[in-house]
Amino acid sequence: MRLLDLLRKSTESLEAAGIEDALPDAEMIVLHALGMERLDAYVNNPEMRKADAAKIKRLIQRRRKGEPVQYLTGIVAFLGLTVQVGKGVLIPRPETELLVEEVIKTIKSEELGARSQDKPAGAASCDSRLTPYASLSVLDLCTGSGCIALALAKEFPDADVYGTDVSKEALAYARKNAKINSIQNATFLEGSLFVPVNDRKFNIITANPPYIRRDELDTLQREIRDWEPLDALDGGEDGMDFYRQILSSAGEYLGPGGCIFLELGFDQAGFVQKLAQEQGFRDVAIINDYAGIGRILEARKEKFPSNKPN
Ligand SMILES: C[S@@+](CC[C@H](N)C(=O)[O-])C[C@H]1O[C@@H](n2cnc3c(N)ncnc32)[C@H](O)[C@@H]1O
Image 1 (spheres, helix red, strand yellow):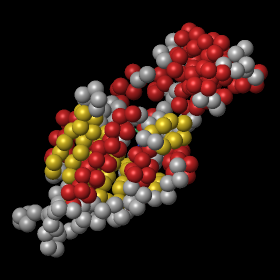
Image 2 (image 1 turned 60 degrees about the vertical axis):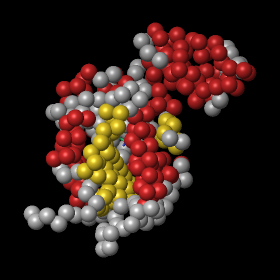
Image 3 (image 1 turned 135 degrees about the horizontal axis):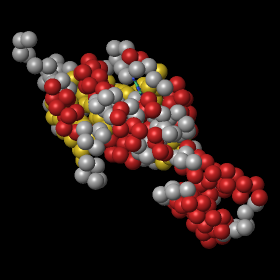
Image 4 (image 1 turned 180 degrees about the vertical axis):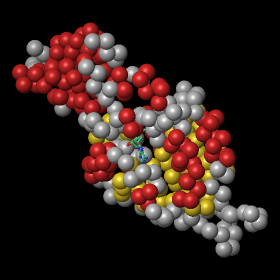
């Protein structure tokens, strides 16, 4: 059998099992199993070796049972990084790339702005404006595969980037992902939220925390519900547990003028924005995704402590 016949059969098999994106999924599986480029496959349409055909059949069977295609191929592209994933770690989503892009934009714009700004005498300088990139420190909470931390570490190779997570399995992927992408300025620590970083201070804190409402977990697509780790999804009764915990402590871990960036569920922007304001953050902004949904919260810790008496 030739490759394109096998691809057609695989697609039909996935369609029959009710898989929505049957053709792209079958293509990804076949090309991954053969280690081939798409163009090469379509132009040359080689005869299949028995062993390859059997391997593809096994992967298609797993996909028919709902296993996400990214767990079958074991990799996801994330802002130019190759991110390895598998059972026990959340598959990075495209929305999360937006969060990283916003962080990069903010850091770069402040670095540019810094050149024309005067620093008030004696002012604290823990933000990125005055000692650019070289002293930049970033903390990515709930780091999972490390995708956010690693994308920022790659963009700012002189920065110190930390990622924390409670999951040993996720951290093993994050460390492996640092290695395969040749990133040396990212450190991954095990523990809940801020606990592993003790009293370090950061210019930037990021998080894509678990944010699904507990009563919605059962209604998720089966690829997510049955395969991705529950601890990566469950945001408590109202989905907001992690936002409350993170925003109530983030101020202690940010230097003056430091910024926090949080990924949000599709209907959470208003609530989390209010939480950030209540915690005393400034310049609280919501950034929409390409579908116009408020996806990212950006907020800043006051740059210069106010002199007002308490
Ligand atoms: C939604 S996933 C995000 C993973 C990754 N940052 C991404 O964007 O793909 C949430 C992550 O939070 C981790 N997590 C759950 N509870 C945590 C806690 N108390 N402290 C730190 N990480 C936690 C989970 O293990 C999971 O890796």
